[in-house]
Image (tube, rainbow, N blue to C red; front, side):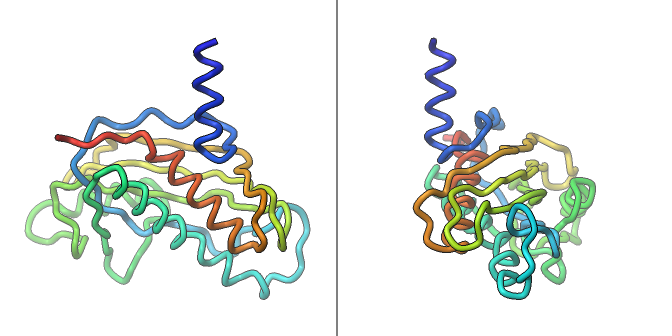
Length: 198
């Protein structure tokens, strides 16, 4: 009964995510957020949709929306958040790319412009982000992968993949609003249980 209640609570907190939130990493004092990778040309709406040019700006904004939501959620938890600016604004495409970037922070030639070396790096990659409707989405099917990487070594300290299902966005009056609600829910699903070092 207790497990059912916890699962129900997690579902409500995530705004209807299909999976329970991942276990948090060990407590940290802060994090440097890498640019979120969102593949260009990915599908926007479930099924066939032909007006790509109309929704392209909304699709292209998902990475930034998710980064804003992650920063807000981490800050609300009391974590210091900086932006890990890579050369040319490069967003690591794969976890291996992100590990290389994190490892490059060792020594006198860091790859990151404004992240302190002691802060771990948060890598996030969008794998799926599709609304059920282009005008008033009730849900957005989402799949992301994320990893927390140690600066200087690239060691993976924590990783997650999910929620791999629908995020409820009922009441959204536009695709932009639906995507924004989904970004808030996914940020909460990913990092909402993280702890801080006191």
